Structures are given as structure tokens and as C-alpha cells.
Figure 1 (spheres, rainbow, N blue to C red):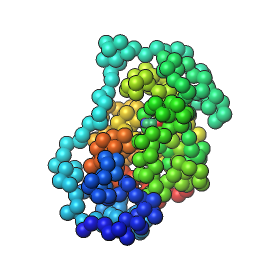
Figure 2: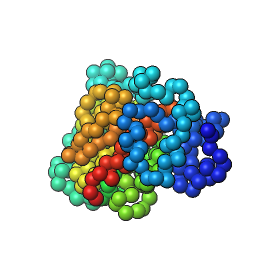
Figure 3: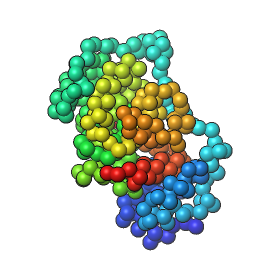
Figure 4: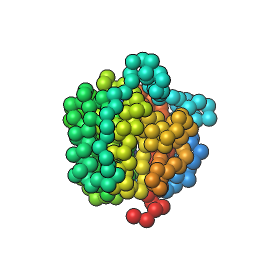
Length: 295
Ligand code: URA
């Protein structure tokens, strides 16, 4: 079965355009949505809003063969992790300075100001500005990415490039948004690092360690009901593990007593649209957690 123009129009109306099935000749980020056969999927999908059911009912015949998780080993994301030793031998030793004290007691205004003036690692030298994060300060859902890229560094906001546009399209079907709304639907988006690593290189462990208290304070103040860790780097940093993302996703984790759902980074999805089905499973899990927990 393929989508009729009428069905497509309906999906567009629901704000689900490019994240969902589009003709095969579409550009990379608009490639067909794959409904995966992830083992948790049926139960999770049953909890989704009824109007999304037609989308989920797409028959298996439409699946490209590579989509079956059991037939496919977990695919690592593009950039390999940088160990402290490897970073040092590549001349990438982090420049560290003293970090401000009392971060865990700061209010929003003080935290913002402190991040804006932070010089705790060498990344401050190459940045145009810090990227603090954005969204509802009591958001039900907090999204955590890796670090600002070039555009984020220029604009001072997280996820504003192509990956950010895809992120918006991913959030829409589960009724989340980055634009102004009530706490139940507006997310708070933050990164592990508040400054752009030069050339978008991987963050160094020491840079992550210096920046970590800022993110921990943001989580403590937002007190989200669910955290979404986007990408291997955010997941590993947040959960303090070196397990590959393929093993971290599909399980529930916890940080500061808050459930953490791990999923692929939108930038990865732009390169590997075949995995959108797996991300859909993860997003359904988020929606399910929100439904289960009292507001
Ligand atoms: N990728 C991220 O992880 N964060 C951003 O803010 C932008 C791209």
C-alpha cells in the first residue's frame, strides 16, 4: 500500500510531513519513514494517539529489508569516541581552568550569566557565544544533544541547523514543540557542551567534565518528567557509560531520578534515514512515559 495524495495531505495537516513516508526519490532527509519491527513497538504504539494509527498501520511490505533490527548489527554513529589518551596523543589536550563554584545552587539568571562568561576550558577561546539552551523552564520533556555546531555558535540557540529542523519534525507527531507553549508540550533543549568544539570535533572528556555541572543544574531546575538523550555522545556522557548507542536505546535509564530515553541524533538520521523507524519507537516510548506519569 502506498499513501494517496489525500492521506499525505492529512499527514501534512497533522504536522508530520517529511518525517513520514514520502516518495523514494525524495532527498535524504525526506526519505521514507521506516516502521521498524522493534520488539517493544506494538505495545508502545498502542498507546499513541488514535489519529496516528493509520501511519503506524503501514504494512511490512513497505519496509526496506535493512530495517529489521535482528538482521542488522547496531550501526555506530559516524564519529568514534575520543579517549583522553588518544586525544592527548593527537595534540588535543583540553585546556582547563577553574570553574565557578556553587553551580548546583544557582538560579536561572545566575546560571545563564555564569555560562555566558565561562572560561573553564579552552573552548571559550574559539566560540562566538555560549549556547545555554532554550525552552520551557518547567518542561515535561528535556532534550539533550551533544554540542553547538557552527550555526548554533553563531545564533546562540541549540539545534538550529538541518538537524534541528529534523528534530522539530520528529517532535511534532508526539505533540512536542520548541516554540512557546505550556510546559506539557514545550520542551527544553540543552547540550552536553555549551560551547562549540572547533571544526565540530568530538568533545574531549575533560571538556565534558568541566561543563557537566551546568547541565546537571539545568536538569535539576527543569525537573522534566522524561529526558531524551539524542545521540551516542549525549547518551554516553549523561549515563556515564561507554556502551554503544545500539545497546543503550530500547532500555530505560535514569538520571537524577528522571527516566532517560536514548535515541539517535537527528544529524545521524539525516545520514541514515533508514533508522527513522527506530527513533519513532523511542519517541513512542517518550509519549508512553508521559501518559503513564501524572503531570
Ligand atoms: N547538534 C547538537 O547535538 N546540538 C546542537 O545544538 C546542534 C547540533
